[in-house]
Length: 184
Image (cartoon, rainbow, N blue to C red; front, side, top):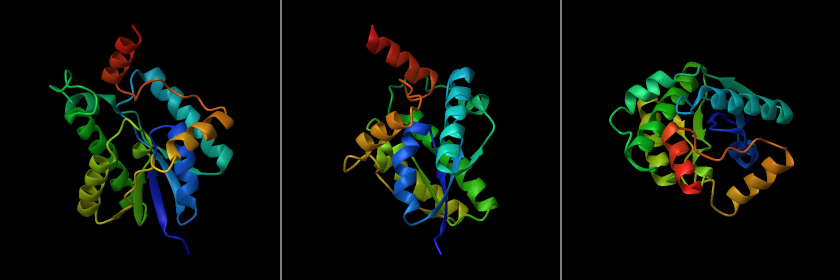
């Protein structure tokens, strides 16, 4: 019997290849918790797209409430930091903590996240946070760098094949502003 794994999912496109890969060895359920996503309309769009994709692939999916106020509270004072800095580290942790707590309450043996499929995310930092949080919750962490071995490119192909909405920025207001600046 395969172990139960709760996969934190940041968005539908990032979930594609990761879910396929993990389903080989685990009973995978998805968990959508992303209080960083801005604005609310974007959050709803990403959540809806993840629900649609989960239905397409028969993935059990749980969605947490949108909690942007908490995210803004814990990142207060970090607004001017560049993408990939301390604000992002805190953002990884809040999402993984919430995932681990949900997993513990619902009897999952493992947790993992799709975050490391992005070439813009530091997999070592994500895995350090995951290890720390999983120890606190007494749950196992599946460490991965899902962008390696062409997996990011494969996720792009799979999301295009599934006709998934692909956002142009990570999710928070600060990544949105940085994306706008790069385009001008």
